[in-house]
Length: 342
Image 1 (spheres, rainbow, N blue to C red):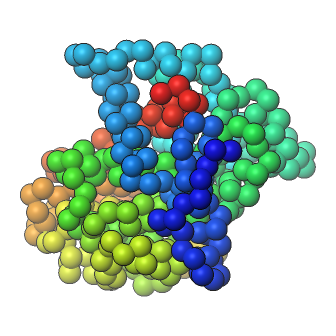
Image 2: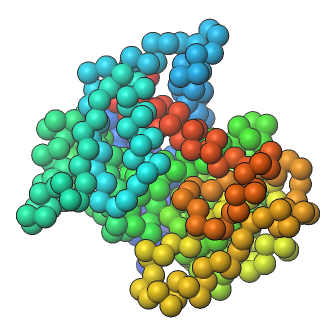
């Protein structure tokens, strides 16, 4: 592979889980032919390049005047493998839509249709699938599984979520959305992550990616669902970000530029009683937003299960459905880059 060793986020001398995470994916992604396993793979320059490509994809899909329509055929004759061992609506459909919009096709595999039911290993399933595909997108319930299986593959593997670990393409589309919603700039923003930050892999990836920028991060959680210490350590040691932890959204809502809400991850809890104890701890409604900035952006990776009321959908800064649309453009750009056609 053409990846180079990365020095910006990799933390020398780390121990335990933080060290394992840094060592797992500290190769800088140069896109063409590379795996996309972790936000540790990304640099500011690489992200900027990707977002410029996403803008081109967006313009082509929307038919904007002067757009480059050749984007819509750049993956003609390319086939993408979609392997999802956990339920997915947005990620699965947006990758399927992305490769289709680029002129390509896709194959779909899930746990019920895979030979894993016959005892086949994950690596054997993927090694067979790459015989038919040019790249593979994998979601798996075990943390670290995507990075672990990548060593067996010759063709690009994209992490679509590994348990409570990471979701790097979600972090990319989230960052793209923040930039579009906040007048093209990240530096100087106050971004509040609200909800289940312990199990919310989208927040893990986003926080690490944001450590490349000069922002202020508020982590607001129910007690017991705090951001994992290894993530906080990576973010703070990067040196760009000021981090504050709270259990009360009211303490930070007035200063917040971007409110990123995430649901409590019911499927990650060992007992229903533990889940019910924290579910509903935070609900964003009109009363919550009474003291917020007029320019506030509200985001959510979806699905929501009550943590943002539907009355908030009419708030001008409610960006979560625009966020989902942006996901298709970012994934179009990512696939085109990884497949070496853009």
